[in-house]
Length: 258
Length: 258
DNA sequence: GCAGTTCATGACACTCAGTGCAGTGATTGC
DNA sequence: GCAATCACTGCACTGAGTGTCATGAACTGC
Image 1 (cartoon, chains in turn yellow, blue, green, brown):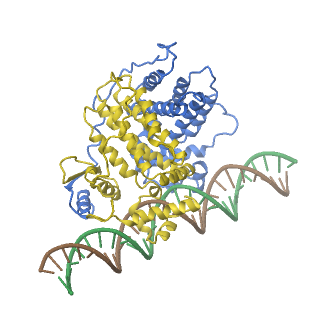
Image 2 (cartoon, each protein chain N blue to C red):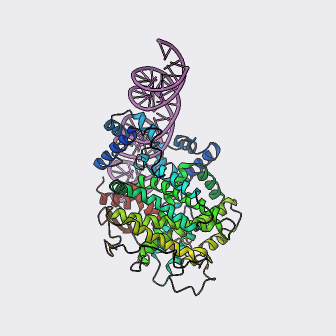
Image 3 (tube, protein in one colour):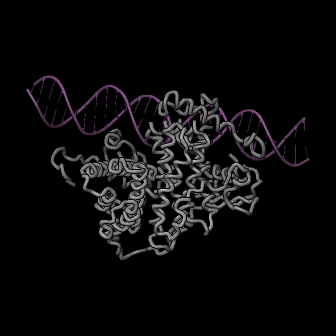
């Protein structure tokens, strides 16, 4: 019972049931050959419920990215002036790797699925783009005022994402057998050295792969994404025209319920 | 050549008519508020014809990217061993800029459209991704055999695309008034220097950064980098232990939705 | 226990993107 | 002239996504 049932709002099993049913059918007969009606029929729920939990058919393939993005945003927001910016975004990228590594079998299946289906590849791009934007926004604030601040922010963010994905895909192609952390450390190390030049701080060129920062989102309290210390309070900032389901999902993510 | 093949099959005017009608309606009432039926009605053609010229509604917004991608692929394929790889992909990226610069008014309109419509942003990502893959594939062959060849290829391609897009968007935000080439040259020059280091090629240290950095109107917005969007945002502050439904209710109240 | 409320779910109907198919009219080649 | 081809149109269909309402379970206060 590590994470289920315990406290206030019980985790809805329907969401997981839908993901399971969807993947069963996707692997059986393919993504495009599976309709939402097929999924809800197998899961034994109403069609409308599917779209209450997932805004689109594609979203059921990436059920945990929203949460991971919230973690990344919180991780970056918790950064201070003492953190080296490039290093910080590299560590933030490792959060994504960790999510993939938490369930290798699932990740490998999904990788093979997204590789085959153009629509899913396109959707994955939009997911990756949001990670990249989160990194870039952080870097923009950290590099503000410096020459070419936003340019460097965008380029470094793109490079970090590309390096991470290069290593991640290598690991996924190995069916989750290899050492994902080693690959990602190596890839991010390359980016760090490539962009360390304008900084005077290449004093520690070899060491800089000190593994992931704490964050241990296993701890229920530590997941308090927004509004760090002033506990007991949650602040949600969202676009007014965003769909309600997305606001609710962010809210849930901020609350640490999943 | 750039505009070759004028002779063979005369360009169908219907395609252009559809693009014109689509943009007229998109600008009038918005992208999502415009149906394909509206477009074909204004263009005075049958609905089925639309999908013969454009595989999807999104494609009508990017009518020339397919051609540009083909040009880029050809440009890279025509490269020889004597070309410096990073420089070559930078020049390839400039082909995209040229396409945008060929029709500034149209490009600016499209930029404003894609910035507003999430679906178009997502579609643009898939377009950009194809450019990036073309660059990365080229670099992979050129860097094959070298240590971390594919990693470096992916990272450099991503950096080039990010730099190009950063400059391109700066130009688009200036309503096509500024010197697009100067911005892109500067941005790509930064990438070239950043990745020129691991190479032993200090033979031409000064030359490879010919950059035209001037850019008279350096920062039109000054430091106000991203102070956009004051409105359109809703903020919810609530106690963490409040029931979820109550938070949602307050959210809905704040939104003005029943 | 009981009435009132809240909310998740399900059933229905609708819009719209995208596709397959058949029919029509014009052009081209013989 | 005749046949084949081509561009176009209309029609019907699938399937994703959305708004709306009814139901029913769980929780409220009494």
